[in-house]
Length: 497
Image 1 (spheres, helix red, strand yellow):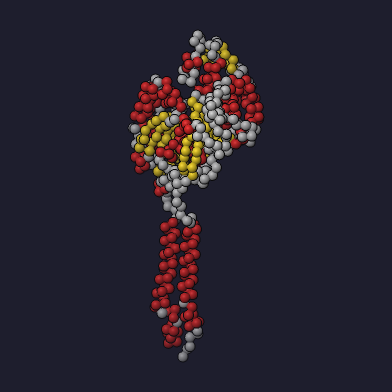
Image 2: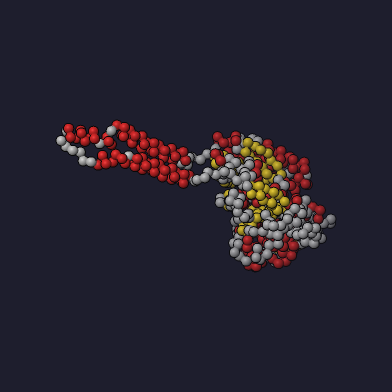
């Protein structure tokens, strides 16, 4: 027993001071690593929300967006959480009964109440942006337009969100915000990559927006929008063609073919065997065609289909004016357009029409697209109805015209060639969020995209924790090595006396 006691007394590892230092060192290193891990570990994410109503000419849609609450005005990525299509037509169609415009939004707004956590209701901004349908109504009847907005505002103010107002977007805004949406969702703005052009087709207007390279667009200031996003400057070309959305341009095509006031009209843009009675007053009830109504037209006319893509294309071409251009280059109707640049995303009606026609694959050559359209338009109407019994006949009948118009607009109007046509990608959404102007609109109003590139930590979370852990281990090893002078004493065998 005395020998063992003497061995412990001679062993420096058993001295109180050495034990205390060792324990403190180990505790300090463990604490360092623990604090680093806890401080930087992912925490349950809290979100903020924004709601945008897209009041288009043919319908209204509601979109709910969410983003990390801790990263406002910095690196928080905004994503679409939910969407709701309002039943019925666009709010501009309720000019005679404006109160119904507000009532039509109720069902989707109740969905928004359920989708957004109640604790966030009061701070969630709510916007309504109206596009070409309300632009046309505002031109035709300013008083009716104001009453529609009054009804809409009254309805929206009855919900527990932070209502930020309703207004009509200009065509330039619609095009520019669509471009922002496409490039934001594709992470091109934050990373400073080459941007994608945006092609938007609605019911009453169509927009084209892109950044031309090394081409001066100052000759037409109304088509130029300057952005500074994430530290990069963008000089965007954009133009909106009012009345050239797929619904209004169909009116123009029908007006062109009925300018003499016939009782029967044969239309190459509708299927063989198609026949319907149309009312002249209803056809010309739009600012896009109202001045073209024949003076001695009958009350109705019979609209029959012939189904000829190439003749239909000739009809569509008559809707474009290519004869006058006071700029260095033009698209149509005397509107300035620089040379096309890069790839394009085509969304809204572009996607829905071409998707129905199975022509969204960008690898399909332009000539094949035209051949497929020719075959489709030439298919008898009865056969088309049998193939698509789930589609309303009104919409089903218009796909031949809409497809022909899209191809003609892109090639004859915007000057896409058989080589550049393949650079058009028909898209519905990007990374789970719908393509369109609404996200870009909200990003702009909430300042979610900084002008300058946000600062970022020098190291990612995993790298930071790894370095701290390695340093802690090195310190521990150095601490052990610092006790090396007393190692020989520890290694000596105790002498038993």
